[in-house]
Structure formats: C-alpha cells, structure tokens
Image 1 (cartoon, one colour):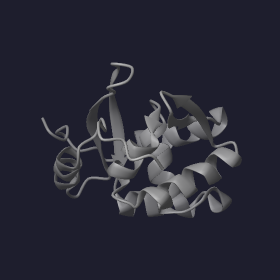
Image 2 (cartoon, rainbow, N blue to C red):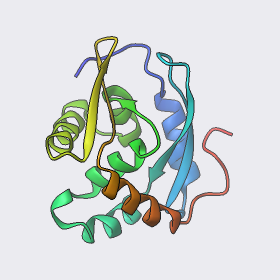
Image 3 (cartoon, helix red, strand yellow):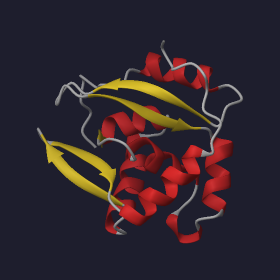
Image 4 (cartoon, rainbow, N blue to C red):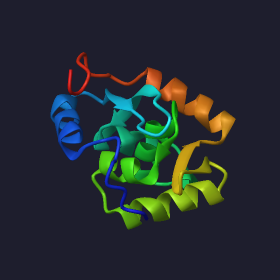
Length: 144
C-alpha cells in the first residue's frame, strides 16, 4: 500500500459522510479524482446494509467486500481512497481488494504508480446495482 499524501478523499470528508449516513442505508459521497480530474459520487453503504447484502452473497465475502464493491461500482478508486472511505487499515483493504480482484469481482489498473480498482464482474455489478437501488439513501450528500 503506497501512502499517497495527496489522497482525493480526506479523513474529514469521510467523517462528515459517516455522520450524514445516520439511520440511512447509504449516502452518496462527492469525490473528485486528483489524477483524472473526474468528479463522481461514491456510494458509502452502512455496516447494517452491507451485512444484509453480504448474507445473501455467500462466497463473495463479508461486510468489507460489499462496502468496497459499493464504493467502486460507479467509478475506479485508488487503494488509499478505498481505505480512507472504509475507515480500515490500508493493508486490510489491500488484502481484500486483491482477493476480490483475484476472484474476478474487481479489476485493477495501475495509474501513476497507484493501484485503482473498479467493479469488474458485469453480472455481479448489475446484481448490486439492483440491490443498491432498494437502499434508503440519505437525502443529503455528505459534505454538502
């Protein structure tokens, strides 16, 4: 895991997102990639909603796997930003993203020496998008 100093997601933005999540299943987190310049919204799923989804997926993985897949279902994120969003140790997140990539669930790109991950399994992506559409997504965007 490379500790990039110019992460696109700041700890304070993620803290605001977690607070805005409240009782909702998920919230959209504004995101601007400093490398590509793209702006996106990242889906941050609550632990409770991720537990429900994980229970229906069997071998896919647990809560962390679901939350990672939710974050990258609409965009590619670098390993540092995934770890920041998850609030987990970078090595734990990298091990899980590597496992998901090895299983064909995520794809990996290297850009400017950083590993980026995205949703790599079209049927699983469609399945998740249907499930995510049923989530109670917070009315406010984090940081807005």
